[in-house]
Amino acid sequence: MNDIRDYLKTFQDHLIAKKRAKATIIAYTKDIEQFILFLSHVEKTDIHRITKDEIDAFLKKLSHDNYTPKSISRKINSIKTFFRHIKLQGHISVDPSQGITHPKYDSKPPRILSKLEYRALRDTCRQDIRTYAIVELLLQTGMRIGEIPLLTLGDISEDTLHISRHEGHEERTVPLNKKAKDAIKQYLEIRSGSREKTAPLFITKSGKPLLVRNIRTSIDRYFKLAGIEDAKVNDLRHTFIAHHLIAGTPLTAISKLVGHKRLTTTEKYLSFIKEKNPEVSKLEEL
Image (cartoon, one colour):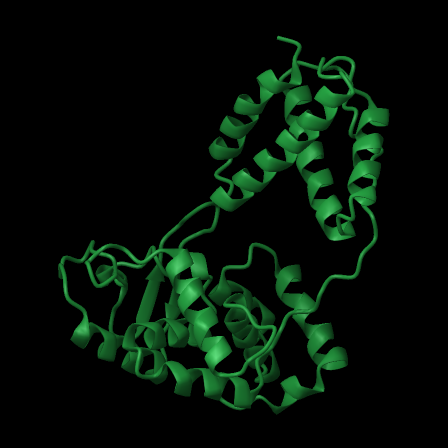
């Protein structure tokens, strides 16, 4: 087995075994498939003949095709992870991706909603009780959008919300404030379908589990109706983190609440809040 194409499936199985997020597995797979397509064009698909030169040529083509430095950096991560796995499995003795460096680029700072913006979002979706409850949960707990569809009726208690372990993220329990509890209570009053504790909390009109794409589409529509530009669903999570940092909540507590694996991920918000966005300092209680 010398053709690089023969190793893609084992690489995917490796990522699954490592409990990598589904989105990560899809992204890594597409990146390696793109790299393999390039190698097939230059007739270098033999795993033992691939060198740093082929990887450099692929990256140069990406740059020529106007891929952003950030996109190229992600593809480098995919390639490095792929070859590291192949080498650890003993299929190659030399990792051709060693010595490949990432292009420099400026990370886009997190988008923090202003007081007027998150109030406008609330007001715009208030009559859509289900979406309003989701917005409040995201804004008041800092949850990931991907965690919303995983919630069951049994995850909701009087004052807390249980978030199950998923895709490499540890389970955690977060407190629910009055705004979140009121929004959930209002939604449960109009929610139809099964009342079993294992039943999904958020469902469609036909009783099927609500999907991430449904949530994203709905909230994006309300962002537009509220006149909020350049905002995404994940910005509700960013706003939650910024608010608590401004309020003086300890970094360790915030990191635990939002499920960050590393404290440094939470720390990155500090410099942004202090140096780049004075509007954040005007945040009042969410």
